[in-house]
Length: 239
Image (cartoon, rainbow, N blue to C red; front, side, top):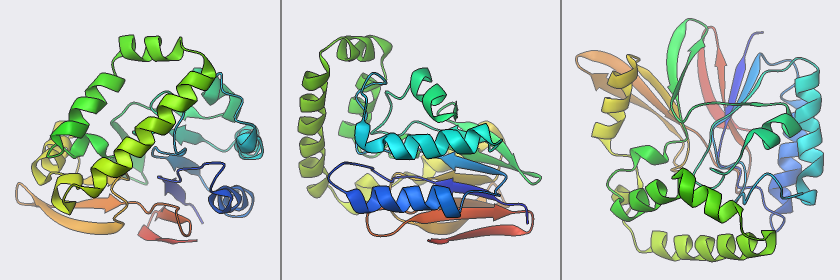
């Protein structure tokens, strides 16, 4: 049966081996035979540059490359934790990097896919941080630093993020409904798939008098989650 798989927010990290083993098993047993796999950001807890050997991720990278070598289309959209993923990573894993907002054809349904952090416009502090780290000059300066320093700064940023998020309401850290509608209108579609918020659900919307949908993907902190898209519909669930 034809099917396309979507995942996001795995936050793979050497301190969370359970998620890494889960992902490796997913690549070995669930992905083969699918039409394509889309990773919609935050594959890693953080990524400090493609020159990082990331030895703990070697098996996962090898499995991705093996799938690609056997003809499986693999696609990657940057998240807020892995915005420094580059072409060297793409070659290493055999995947194609997509734009921050990309429209794909899912069995006849044009669908907008993204990580989702750009939709959280009520979180003013985060949006300012996002603009800073997406700036090519900032990225070039960061990548010029020694690898150990980059890791240390990423750990500090992760700690600050955890502290900041705890002090914010759920409404601020969720997507803004107007930002969602604007994104759908901008691309002329009625279906959106994203991650980031860790609040899996399928939301039915009204967009200018027409039905629309917003599908939010699972994170992988406890168990793996995925969206399965087939010609006859979509199914959101866990492994």
